Length: 203
Ligand SMILES: Nc1nc2c(c(=O)[nH]1)N[C@H]1C(S)=C(S)[C@@H](COP(=O)(O)O)O[C@H]1N2
Ligand SMILES: [Mo]
Image (cartoon, rainbow, N blue to C red):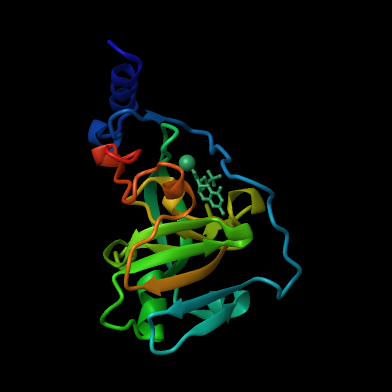
């Protein structure tokens, strides 16, 4: 039996539904830190988030404005393309769909580019970011998100590999056409469904 089969068996032994672990993944209790470049630091009031592109009303939110919006808590599994998965992570934030309703998405918009500090980007179909569990999050396990994990605010798109969830999120750009983001330009899959093992171009 290979490493990943053993791992799935271990998941079942620990009382989880084995189907929650996508093939080629192993379960970790730790929370690995993964990013390119430096961790940004923000002075109070410095961080903001811009919703722009193919919308009727572009707007920019401060951290306080974001936190004043109706929020939801989500418990979800996350899957990194480097093969670790983590179950039952708990996040609090605002549904992206609510932000987009306020912006008034133009009918021709079909894709979103998530923009993070220092130019990291991730492209997403609009349909995925409109899902119930797609959120702009500012709390992890009941605390402010640590800077190393993307605090003050990151995107969370749990149905796709975790590279599609930019840390230090600064912009959501509505687009008519798709374009590769940072990792997608480097060979990662344009969509990235962990349950279909869409890791790289051609998967
Ligand atoms: N801004 C930014 N966001 C990013 C990344 C990055 O390099 N820069 N890496 C992505 C990848 S590949 C993963 S697996 C997750 C890791 O998040 P974590 O460090 O909180 O585990 O962040 C994603 N978001
Ligand atoms: Mo990743």
